[in-house]
Image 1: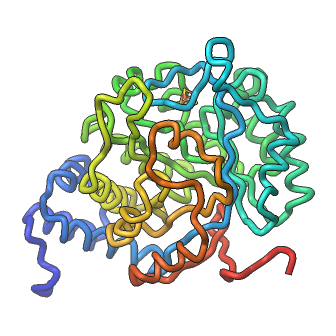
Image 2 (image 1 turned 135 degrees about the horizontal axis):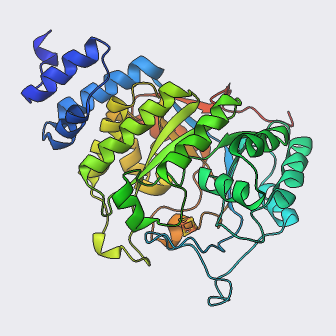
Length: 376
Ligand code: SF4
């Protein structure tokens, strides 16, 4: 080992040896990574792991993002988005299938991913609503991958239609589902989960939905909501459960750390996450999740500048343009300071300024020339 690569924190030196030997990191290693003040070595280890996975490439996607309804009665304590149809009439919205379709095409056809999530709305979250709409998208926009739902939404529809997970996944796949979003994972640790989202899928159900998707060839992503009442132990436990799930049934493409936002919800006393915590979380995730190909720094959540720095701490993806001026409502209701839209030229500039090579992708990481256009 050269002098230049010796870790200042001796614990990190031992972890570096494990990584070099190809061993997965343990629960205790994860705690040590979070505890270190040696940010430079932590960043170097995560960056080297990123380089082994994706070299100098950093990905982005031209996409459209839509929240199709905010009607929801799950009552998650960190949520500022959900609205009660009967008590909050002024805040409620519910898009029709035609409105979703028109919204997706509002700024043209040149995009490769449609990302839609919404509340657990008894009137919208059903196969009768979604299957025809998905088929319409596939018929009219064959170059667009459908990244729809979270595991919680799929579980809700399965219970509503009295279908098993294999049966509902088969129907969604047949209608054109390419990828399922990583939300609703929150924190798997049961005691904490009960306090923040007691009416949502359990951790075991969330993992089972994703494992069934993967068995049937539908890709997905995974997330972790951090910076609220969870402990560092909860975070490491969460990452290890994801790693174990990926071993059982591979198919996760990217892991996305989601920083809790405090405006307008019951956990607002927890405040905002700090830059050090954000950066460490990207690095720890990159090092713990050795069987995930991508770690995404989602600019909407931590902000463009922190996400650019995250590229030096293991992240290799900056998510998408979004393509509209008013569509993301979940994080905007909770106070995000990010805007609604980032031009793809801005992504390329930020990535190149960080010393990496921007690569345009779709949901499943097929790549495109930056000026690819479906109408060309
Ligand atoms: S986080 Fe999702 S499931 Fe929970 S209350 Fe908000 S909209 Fe509903």
